[in-house]
Image 1 (cartoon, one colour):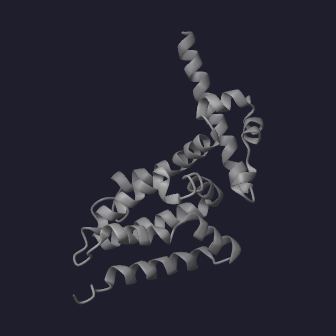
Image 2: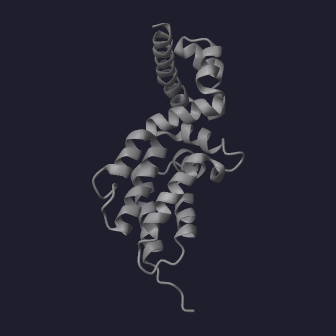
Image 3: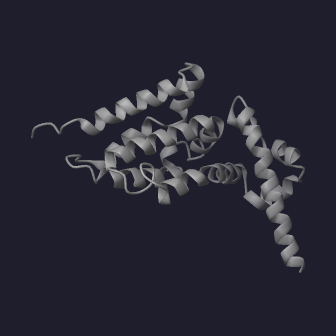
Length: 197
């Protein structure tokens, strides 16, 4: 009985921490401004509880990012087309990138914190490999597209958190304009014929 109560308390504490951490990251100027002490205070738990539950700040950021990303991932894995399986590949690529851009716009500081946790490179972050693999797999189904691997990297570069922050935050590009620019760019990439040999 004590073990069950301990697990219940731990789950409740983790939920409280994630609920408290989200608004802190959403309101901050820079993701580096949010400390573990800030999160512990906002959640009403001790710092020891926070470290036991998430290991470190990167673990907390990953857990919060994953919790927010879960509905999007479910739509991608098993939802209806065009975001889910079954859509024509080019249309699905457009939908995947648009949804990823919207997610990063809605979670700008959190995305910056997570992509900055990849040992100095966003490409080393765990989530990047997952999205690259999915996009590459869909791209490889498009006839005439020779290098799905590179194309996936190039298209994902357009939705990097630092670029999204630069365009939306520093340059003030409106959300609808960003989405339209990304769609236009993606269509050009996918429609471009291979150069002659």
